[in-house]
Figure 1 (tube, helix red, strand yellow):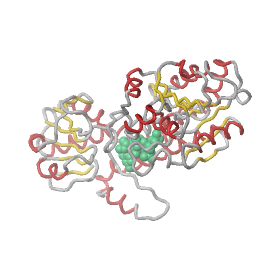
Figure 2: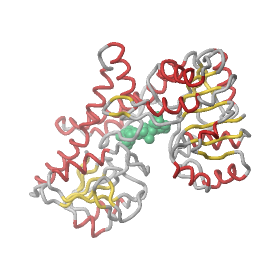
Figure 3: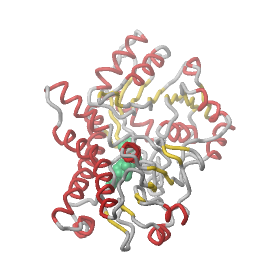
Figure 4: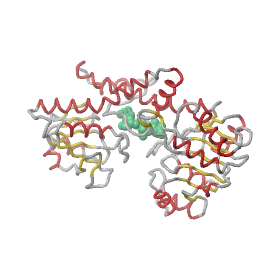
Length: 417
Ligand code: SAJ
């Protein structure tokens, strides 16, 4: 079929390339001209799609990238994989709206539009459908098919590939569900039909809210463990030996990224809209999560004071600035808040981030190598992300004082979060 994937990011590009590989004629549509240039040159900027895979589908004409909406003409199925950020705590669905309007201009009878972007329950039927109908003059469920199928990309995972991860599929009606299910059945191993688009929208939010709530639970436990005189890390490991009814999460400087601090807020916002009060679990989880960077800084200030060093003027080295271990993404990284708070207290902050280009600055701090000299010259070192590329033994050996937010280090100079 003629397939359009609108939005060629970490969700859209793997989907587009896979669809091309199984025989569809695919247009990877994106408004970012720089991305289109890279894609056309066969350069992938998404870790889960190698440039050689991209060049293979580019070369045979199965895939082409375009920012020109004329390239959308005649699509049989269009998949929307655009961002849904928060703007001041409020869901921003303007990218979905803009994309729907563009697609609506090319929507023909018998075609299908699928939304994949993570969003609040009701978006497909209350926002996407009316915009498509208004832009096309057609009627959903009569002239064209529509539905929702949330993404489940595990960025960088070697265990879970795009085609190996079960995919929820839903439609505005049975006929839409059938068309959408057969599309995904053609490109991945397992589809899971859901009776309505709202159930599929909510399922995705449950997946991420589950993670945020449980990560915030262990984070709050970490903030009270010292007062309880308990090693929370060991207690969590002990609990994790329970072979049923438990899933292990570990404390850290705060859950970052463009999913966990964002998606649950979509759910809470919708509940607030409908009921006038937010979803309390999400509000509490967000509060705890937002507090974690300040808690890390407080522990550091106390640790320096205990060593006779005021934080003002102290040289602090942050290890790991990205939002997740081994990730290259800085979005919503807790390190940003840690660096800002420490700088505000007069500390001289440097960052070591092996997953980012050398010699630049990130999150407002100069990037350095975590050399022995750098470690030894720091009044305090904070292990925020235990990237595989760090030499943790060197940190244990050469750092005078380390606040370890990942329970990876041992030694008299180490304090665990
Ligand atoms: N984190 C902890 N403790 C934990 C687990 C995670 O502090 O025990 C932190 C991480 O450091 C990170 C944040 O939480 O800052 C989020 O981590 P994550 O593992 O949830 O990864 P994300 O946000 O990149 O993406 C998640 C992934 N879901 C997983 O089940 C791993 C990803 O596969 C999903 O596609 C994505 O949510 C999404 O879009 O739903």
